[in-house]
Length: 110
Image 1 (tube, rainbow, N blue to C red):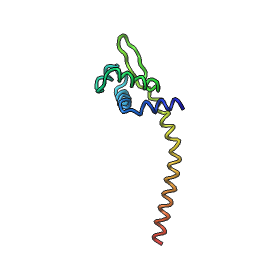
Image 2: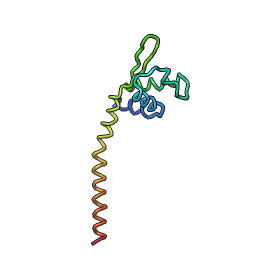
Image 3: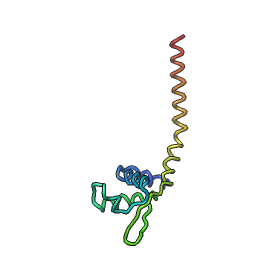
Image 4: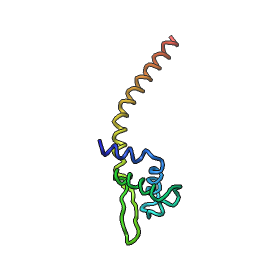
């Protein structure tokens, strides 16, 4: 459950979701390229990346003096699996609602 909590915490913030989206679209990026379009100090970007790293959604690789960050999207599957558990519950409730609605509609016409 801790792993799911880490991932949910990581994707809860719009800046971190923006970082994930950019990495998904562009592939590995230099830290400075990730930070460039964000309207915040480098320290704040570092904190966001650390949260993503803690959730194991990104990975840093050093190539000489450059630090590259790459997306590790497999961990997002934890969220998908968690939400999927409730899909059956909601489908069942919606099916019951639909039956009641149809029954009321039929009763009005008879």
